[in-house]
Image 1 (cartoon, rainbow, N blue to C red):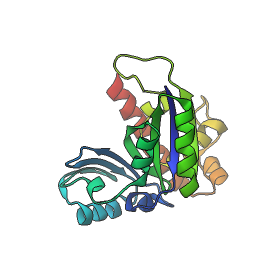
Image 2: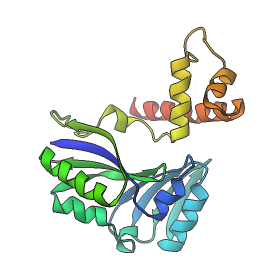
Image 3: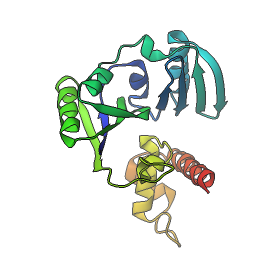
Image 4: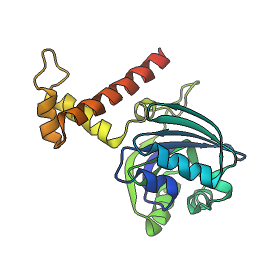
Length: 214
């Protein structure tokens, strides 16, 4: 089996809501309704769209993160050509769908690498596509057969990832520290308080994710 993570610049309200922001949306489709996890500064805009499009049956909010259960499935109202292309090339979509940076991020699985290549070719003919990763699935674990280290990580926003990666690279997490948050902020061209907020949120998500797995 072969797997690829593709970022597709596909028109849609969820993708549009994440463009130029730290907002992320994860979607699990259940035919009769959807489960959404929304995080980031644009969460309220996404909520407004969902309420207008399919309705919200249940909502749990904590800070800038929200968990939503919709009244109806968005797929029934919003035709998606990506799914037809998946079926045409005998490929599978591994849930959840993820929207970030103005793109729809899909984990696509195919039995034959040629099918995956053909799927990419057809989608790229109509939309801008970024290939984040590609790998051969050569072994399985009974509990999580398609889990990779990347997919096990929490859903960090692009800004949180940049802040964390830069802080690590510059030695902020070494003992003793090589740099201050002010120096990391200067490197990224943001205010110190903004950087510290990105780091705090990223650290919180990482710790909660690993604590849940312990």
